[in-house]
Amino acid sequence: MGIPRLVPVFRSAFPKALTTESAYDGLVVIYSRLHSILPGSASAALDPFSAAVNAWTNIDQSASSGVAIVPAPGAPGGRIVLSPTGGLLGDVDDVRRYAEAARKALARSRAAGIRRPLVLFPDTPVTGSSAGTAARLQRDYARYLEVAILGLLAEAYTPLQAREHLLKLGESEEPFDEIGIAVDSDDEQVMERAISVAFAVEEGRRVAKDIGGADPERMAPLKAAAYIERAFAQTDIKINILKDLEIIKREYPLLHAVSRAALPVSRHHPAIVQLEYHSPDPSQVKENIFLIGKGVTYDTGGLDIKAGGVMRGMSRDKCGATAIAGFMKTVSVMKPKHVNIVATLGFVRNSCGSEGFVSDEILVSRAGVRVLVGNTDAEGRMVMVDLLAAAKEHALSAAYAAVPSRLLTVATLTGHAVRAVGPYAIALDNGPAKEAGVAKRLIEAGNVMGDPFELSTLRREDYAFVSPGSVTEDVVQANDKASSATCRGHQFPAAFMSVASGISVHGLDSDNPICYTHCDIAGSAEEDGKGLSLGAVTGSPVAALTGAFLL
Image 1: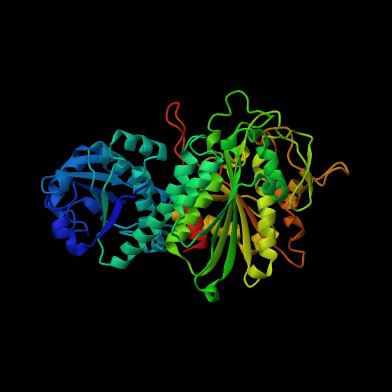
Image 2 (image 1 turned 180 degrees about the horizontal axis):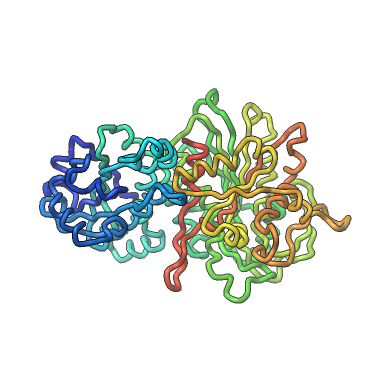
């Protein structure tokens, strides 16, 4: 899982680094304005190659929009990859422009055989802007450098099973050895900070991608737990893995019900992974964060089986849990002092079989709430409910009473989320979380970190939808339709989890209000596939969580 070495190249090193004597074999230039790479610009870094760059811009009208590779005698490797961000000032422009330009640049570099690129940023988002737009650009693009570096690292990533295959063949597992990062500025601290943050986030994203992107056998529940155990060895994160089926059945009955059909196959047995981080300085702690992740390693739909080809890609239904595992890896690197974080991940397989749970069953949650099952393909909320109830118990305990606690569920939960907002994550708060601005923090952090969230709202209709119509149950888990065919299909599951976990009685009008935010990442967890292949796992929302709770 080796991340390419990220090396800051300061302006004082330009005279050597930007020549053929450089340790790098290609120069990559990411720019927001064409003027920044032309002769006479404020940046002198490209002056030695002005003739080559100017000749290219004269013959290629895509210089402001498309990536290109230009022969440049005297440059590292004798070549320059030029990648513009495109516009930054429009209504729908955002910092992802930098990530996209970086990914395109590195893809072109890889195709050219470059293994040690030096990436130069000759301008900033604010360069050449008017006084009226400078403040907005500084706000919206405050972490453009981190986002650009993360774009580079996203393109440099090789999936786990591909690396394992290459290792067996004795071939190189990684396409890049080192990436130099150069900013035409004297502010060395900005560059060092950006590299440090990007590295920490990428450490987390790679954990999320390795587990989330692996096939359902390579990352069956117990193997996912084993990977996490190795990933957190010799870190400040305390790890506990629960595999005992009797304890799981007693303490997490809804999760156990989902796993029932998988129990005849030992390698498909469930695992509950808990990762705990406590600040090295308790006096600086401002809040406790409890994260719950859905880790369904394969979702057949259960006995309400996914038919008609829609089962394809359901190995990615674990990406909520894997993203939280990744975030905790970032936590282990950054070692924040202002927060305690406890993550609980439920890894199960929702199989079909004679032991499978069925619609019409009434199950009692950890919180003592009677749950009427309406659809076995709504298993993710059941996996998380008892874990959420346990987190609620911790939040109410004396051990965490000194500062506010925030509870979050993170899951690829509904097709409705994709139908509603496309490739974005969704955050929705209960009353106390809304007052505390938790979803707002995620949205603001996601905007700056290039990992966007959309805001949704939990309403009384969502609670009404899951309310019981009989004295035999306290809450109904789901209807018998796909979420994408159900009004408010991504909102009402949050209401269900709130009721079934016992959090709903800790609202704004209670003596002990509890902040609860649900994050549906079904749209942001993976990219579109190419051809008939599955799409790449993104590692979202590791970057947004980092921006919201660590920076």
